Amino acid sequence: MNLAVLGAQWGDEGKGKIVDLLAPRFGVVARYQGGHNAGHTVYVSGQKFVLHLIPSGILHSGTTCIIGNGVVIDPNALMTEIEMLAALGIEVGQRLRISDKAHVIMPYHRDLELLAEARRGERKIGTTSRGIGPAYEDKIGRRGIRIGDLADCSLTGPLAGVVKENVAARNRLISGAEMDWQAVLGRLAASWDRLQPWVTDVSLALAEAREAGRAILFEGAQGALLDIDHGTFPYVTSSNATIGGVCTGLGVPPRAIDGVLGVVKAYTTRVGEGPLPTELTGEAGERLRESGQEYGASTGRPRRCGWFDAVAMRYAVRLNGLDALAISKLDVLDDLDEICVCTAYRREGKLLHDFPADSGVLASCEPVYETLPGWSSPTQGAQRETDLPSEARAYVARLEELAGAPAVILSTGSDRVDTILRDHAILEDWIGSSR
Image (cartoon, rainbow, N blue to C red; front, side, top):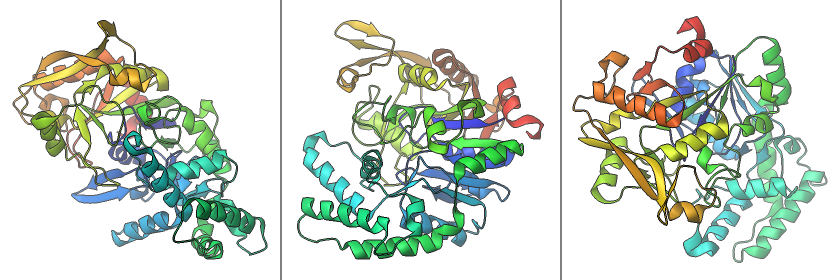
């Protein structure tokens, strides 16, 4: 079966670990959206791997990894990542495929994003300022540059004309250090020389994999609540992090997706600006941040932390048709006497049970909490459900009930082995008897 794994909150849910865990059961792992603003962290036997563009399945020697057309690619960032993996003993070799339709993050995109954020002032989005948004803007504006275009970097070719026009537009907006379009074109030529062996028609490659009976794992970046269409707009990412992004970002039909797994934390976090109804400030928020080491894998920025938001979770389950959940960082809640779960919002004296589309409305909502008992026994490193204290099992059961989806995987630590695979028919269907 082909499985989509995506984030069901505001990103940073632990997708990298879950994809790495499941990857040996799949022949192909395909990334369908986002850019190097994503940061998927995987620990294997204590060794840390931070991946930004390459799917987490690259850590398994028998897995082919695909970067789809829905991803925007900074060639330098991609090559840095490949070199980082090589230094840690992971050779990409011929196991990587890059869509010829994927758009390129250009040097001027970073400049334009920094300018846009500065102009917003107090209304800033809180982007990573890595050029992701402007690259997607150029894609939609039909002035973008695709990986396949780099095959002709001659001064008289069509690519040269696009680069010259885009650099001139950048120079008109940003005074001071002018950018040389010919130098930019030269860097693109150098990038093509390195990337060309991996560039292919990804849609065709995935169709051939399906025909050959190779199971595919579709890997998302960011999270459902950051989706450009369905997230907390305008405080969102620039791509479709929800399930529809699989089809558009890889060129596969909806029937290629046999199951959808949503990854969630046992609490809630968010990086950057935007509403977070259950946010904890002061000592309580700091305790979650330090215990969970909640700092961005891409930027190092501290994450905002809060209690589990079941209203937002029900929305993500409905939006993506989530068949099941993987709950991460259960161990971060160890030693808390009480744990709160948001079951509804209150606004202007009225209860809201559905996630509002308007970010201003969401920002004015107060969470309605249900309090559950904590547990005094550590869960860190637990690999069997029977190792969990009864209160932790009850907490998981309540989250399942509120979300309307079963939790089939529980993560109890950062390492690959710190995981509980629950005895559930859905999980058995997805990963089979190799479990």
